[in-house]
Length: 342
Image (spheres, rainbow, N blue to C red):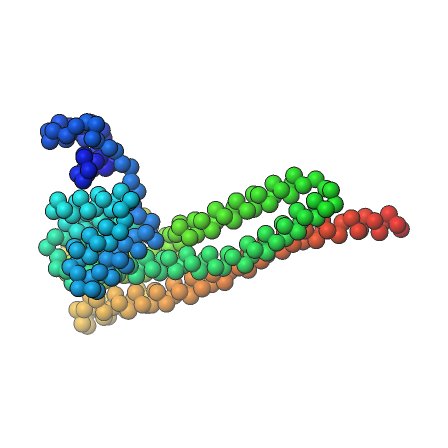
């Protein structure tokens, strides 16, 4: 699927060039005016900034539509912003205009932003999305900070080894290749960390973090007025592949008329029986889900702290290898000289 631009402000999405040219013929657009754009969703940091700007304007008494238009207006060179503006001006719903450029983990949440939804629930959903992205970006910052110290030690050790090779007129090709390779690897690691790729990998592969995110999305959608069945249906279409089986099962059970306590996935709850007891006694879906989300967030933060503590230790172990190599290179001539003297 690609976006096609017709003239200055008209954008449509088509499967192929043929469909775009057919549209141009029907609506009498010049073929020369057609431009194809292959665009990707916003990165988490970009989308977080867009949400923050939008919410800032909402706090200043702007309507949500006006707030988003002003936030997008700050991105004059961003082709995605132009497309969203065009879609909104053509009457596309708030959620449908944003979904093509929303980070994958938030697509289910933005699918609930229908035209009929009032502004209060829409703003609440934007705030929930911003909170999820803020946690993800904070994790990226934590990881990058934990990498800085061991990376600097490695660079210092390699610099000493390189200077030693230069002063002693040794072959510097090997050390130069090693230094370049390590530097490129470090820069790439920091780049993907700050971009959010590494934090996304961690989020996808740690079950607790995934469940915590799903619970946050579920609560936001329920609070926006969605039924539990519709919420599960939207989540199963956009969830991580490891979570889809339980969501499909829950959706089928809800469609079959089973009570919610028999449908909600048991792995969402940290303590056995907590789900059934709360739902049967109070018939309240939200309260046990809030407690489960808070429990998972507490556990996840402990895991993240352990990861961020383990990374510097691993980095220092690797750094010690480079330091040992450098010291051997520095003292090897002295050892050879002492052996020769003996």
